[in-house]
Image 1 (tube, rainbow, N blue to C red):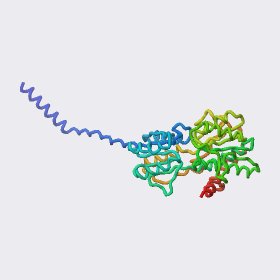
Image 2: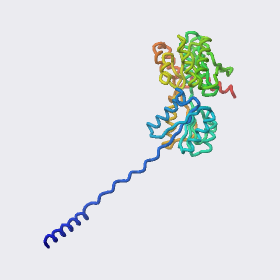
Image 3: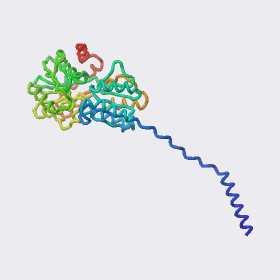
Image 4: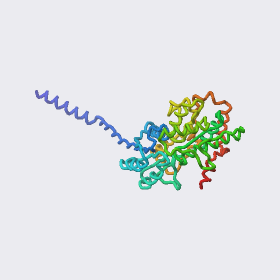
Length: 358
């Protein structure tokens, strides 16, 4: 018995020595706490998130930021202009890091809340500030450049010698399209000795057709039918969802065509693609995504981003179902015209128009 006890004691001693000499296990590293996601909120204009135009395109930029950058995104729809301040306030109260406001009409409210909340970053589509506000990036687009191309194209494609355009509300992000379009037509006339007329807008008089809103498709239909009645066979509505009513009118009149704005209407409003000659695009989704990326990586600063033909911020969409109907010679002229605008050889007329307003 004593021998058994001695053996057990010896085994315990040996086991203790082995354990003492064994290397100690390294504790598993503690995972660093996950960095909180950037919270970004978007406030729409009254056209709503599904306007198939600038609100929808801007929201797509938010979705790109969510999917590519891992940020948290949300939106609040404005049903009327008094909702702008209410919606911005809600995002601020919920401690959002960045707020994107969409549309020229949100300019004053964005400025007010940005100055009261300097630690919140803001970006606003279709507006800029002079002098700049340190925590606000204005996302603007030289749509006079691609609208000039669209006007030139329309002048080359019309069969009636009359093309038309109209706006939602008379504000710079609308009139810039119309001025560029008009001057593109004039440039075609100059180059080809033609006399294509532009209905619905005249820069020299600062007058044109405006329906007074961005929501009513009925107003868009009436404006489109009026222009068609005056002889226009190509119409460019610069009015957000209002233009969908124009598209419906165009579809009902054989031989007429539509030029979309803001986004490629053959994608955003595919049901009207058979009558869409092209679209004058501003790539708001890319601009919004890039603004959020700047906030995320620490390079964000106030000022103004300008989308141009040169940097890809604006451009005309493919001709889609009209591709075989646009003459190769006209396509080549458009390619050269684009290069000439980028090189500064062509005056789109926008700065001249602005000068007349001062």
